[in-house]
Image 1: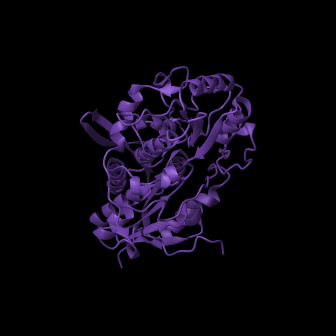
Image 2: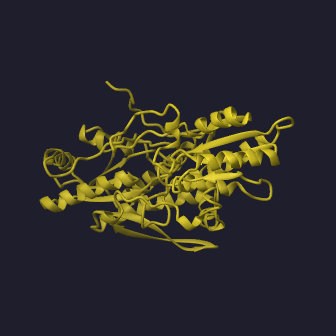
Image 3: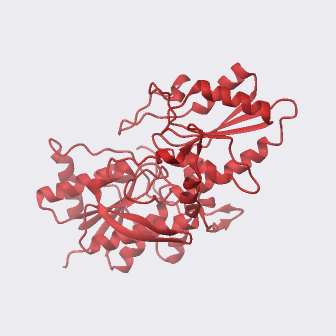
Length: 417
């Protein structure tokens, strides 16, 4: 009996509106290349270590399922935040991963994720080289944070940016309805720990029918609380509606996160990342108490990464392509690499794809360029807008059933046993 040619694919980290498009790309390529079985990791590498595998062919049988998968938010296979330990002294964990791969005749492993997920690909490919293993490992880029190096942008960002800009236009319209007696100040909190790419997307709301936010604050620039309050006071004297976009990760010059000025969470994940939220509440409370103005905090939270109904078609197509090309590259013998996107031309928009050594990508964060942060750290430049505008273009109509979008759902319990 001939050995089977099988692959396994996993999803890791925070989901996006198009992470399943990358999964669809890997699956489509594996089918085209004639692989016998396509396994999915249930909850990423953590599930894989528990031998919790999904036969994806049971769910994705034809092109209709591929299209439904593209329109499904979150991570279809389930995600995790699990950090592989350093190789030295922890060889038993790596041996177990390779034993599971060999047991299931898996020759290629694909991991869809961001910085920390690319670290997993780096560690596994390094261990394979160290031990003379033949299995191959490829990274598929994904993160709404848009902070992976080398690649021009990451799948997931365009759709999150589209949601942020679209919903902010709606918030601005809503807030402009009031303010007859006193101005109303709205502070919108947007995800972004160290990189402000998502918050910068607030600038995309500006156009003929929308003035956009009055100020935009990114974590790349120190946040001056006194200056912020003075600017809010001045704006409130000039207009009845004030809308401000802030990153969850904005911090003071002394390094403290603004959210820590309130009752911030002490929770820290496996990668040492502190949970950030609440800076908008801190700021609105200060505006109310010190300026006597009506103020409201809005936290987009998971909404900005789950809104597949408003995903960018450009983003969906690119997410699918990086997944497809990762599978194709591994089939050609490549390992320890990630697919990257290169923008050949922004107007008209044209991209090319490459593969790059994972060692130059894993654990490296790319911030918003300092020259794109303007007006004393309270806005972003037109250069950013030119960069990001093509990424939010196009739509993919959801498959509607009884008035709501239909999703492809994995029939496995997400509860602990």
